Image 1: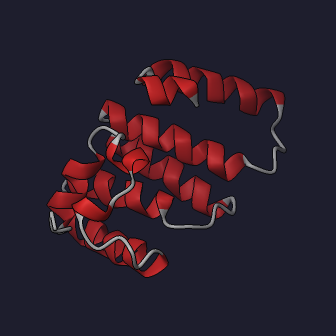
Image 2: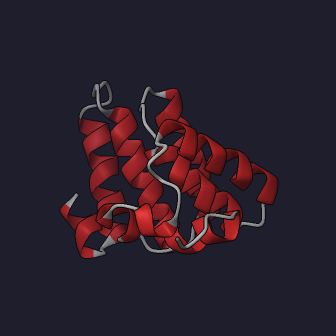
Amino acid sequence: MTHTAGGDYEQAKTDIKQALRLSPRDTQIGLWEFIYGSADLALGHYAEAIDEEHRAIDDGLAGYWPHEVLTAAYALSGQDKEARVELAETVRLNPKITSIKSLTPLDVGIPRLVEGLRKAGMPDE
């Protein structure tokens, strides 16, 4: 996690892969997949981010976070319909997220997330 906070997304991905090899039955695998997908989004690897976020959801990660990353990845890869569906799911799961201004500092810190959310239709205020 410190690598993503510091912006070293390639190293974060390497560390997560290693952790999952060492502990393939980790009960928090969905969280690790979410972080991995966020790193892919930050690096501009949209198809990979989409795959990872779907894995995170499939592996039981509850909450709006993977849907938020999916929104941005879909929007930035030109999949507008899917982006709008994921944006609606993000807001349904966290009604406090109504605009870019309402995002948490952690959200805003993910490169390309805000750009993708805007492209999907999230207003600035």
